[in-house]
Image (cartoon, rainbow, N blue to C red; front, side, top):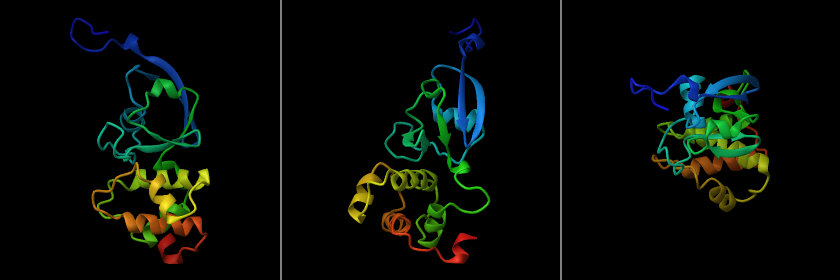
Amino acid sequence: MLSESGTRDAGDRIAITLTVNGQRRQLQVAPWTSLLDLLREELDLTGTKKGCDHGQCGACTVIVDGRRVNACLALAVMKDGASVTTIEGLSTGSLHPVQAAFVEHDAFQCGYCTPGQIMSAVALIEEGRARTREEIREYMSGNLCRCGAYTNIVDAVESVLNGTPVRREAAE
């Protein structure tokens, strides 16, 4: 609801609870707030990128309750009670194996899509459905890379799926 001054009334906010990167958060959000905007603007987790804002590029991919989600399409209020993992919560002290594989295989160029690519790859691996390069490409097809690092991205994901060790210097 707009007030006489034309701004949103604070009474429009809804209480939700999310566990974000392992930390329980109680928040007040406007009903129209996307999960992406909540993460970036309210929680200052800017690793999750805003690309197209239409669910077509995958730059905003996060993991919600173990599933890949385009955060730009999810309303924060619809995720009340959920567990959300962003790129910031993926590693604790050392690189996650997928992050290390992206470094090892030079699976990024400009880096803008990289957080979404990595989050999608982590979920893909945890889902356990992709076993071949073709399946990796199919399951990663919702994540666009304008620089064209697709071959290297598939190499990185395949190396983690196959348990190929990452060289020590790439993991540090």
